[in-house]
Image 1: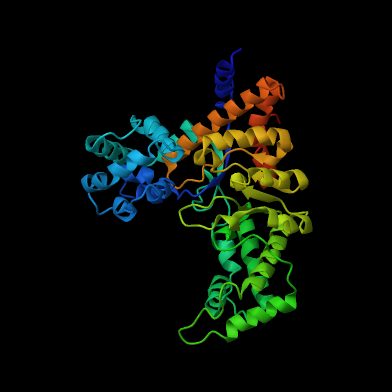
Image 2: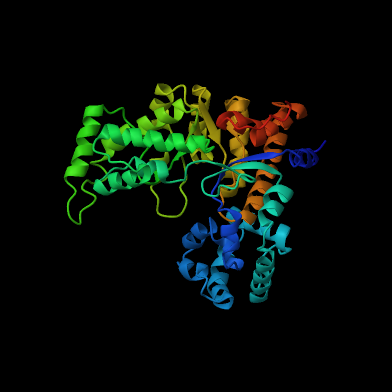
Length: 429
């Protein structure tokens, strides 16, 4: 059988595997239905980063619901041509084709027609048509929407990081409002954190996510309670008047390190999974070095009873993330977002992980989207990438076809059940 024919055969079989989506930013459907959608809506998530990188910063106008479709197209068309071949745009084009019958925008007339079709479809049932009927997604681990028909909740992207950043009295007051009691010491603050995380766990939350890599590196030192308490007291006592943030980010770092350790302990005691953003950050102008996964090793070793997930396979440090999953039985590597960043790099990652990582340690798909139609495009790329990469491994003699399909089932479905302790049966159960 030719390589192309084998890839196509695998793709057909992989397309029948129910999917557990490990990472989403989707709002609940009623919120989406309240948007004034137009053609630009479909390009309003990751494509905005490419649009900025392409050279023109007109994103605010393009995404402004008060700007006419005609004016948006005038601003969008020249930059669109520069990004239209990238994989972010490819995800959008695949969703456009599936749901609105248009594979690309070629004119103002196309933009107007796509807008009309989107507004007609922006009705109750949209999420079921996309996530269930077209994608075959069992559930999505989601940071925002809470509709249990579609989502299993994980704490919001910034919540854990913000709770650990006590830079002044305003952060303590924010916590007091959440738990409705006074907080006068570090010990009481940690107890409040434990109360909030436990409340989330009782509400069905399966994970605690840190996006610390957007603001600092991932080296969280083991800080003594005395040192952390000293910083906590300074943060409160030095706040005054219109200066609610008394300390700078570097000054508060020991306290943040301490609180991250405590939050991981709390999550572990509740059997919740701890998720870290690693690798490429969304948007533009980020410091990539902050997102390297290696410095997390001390957390993996110290909290060996806690499950950790490394989002985005730490791209470009795919191998480093794989080594972490190879070293530590409590670490999983997650290909969420990677398929949309670059199918070429995603296929290379899958081939690498077949060689490097036990089959149960890799999570194969998370769309990481806030536009529901883009989930379909991202999943289509993921299935294509898995089929091509696994066909390559068969061609190398590293796998036979049944074992290749076992990898696909594990990555798209079964591994997420174990990593997040989901109430879903494995496919062969």
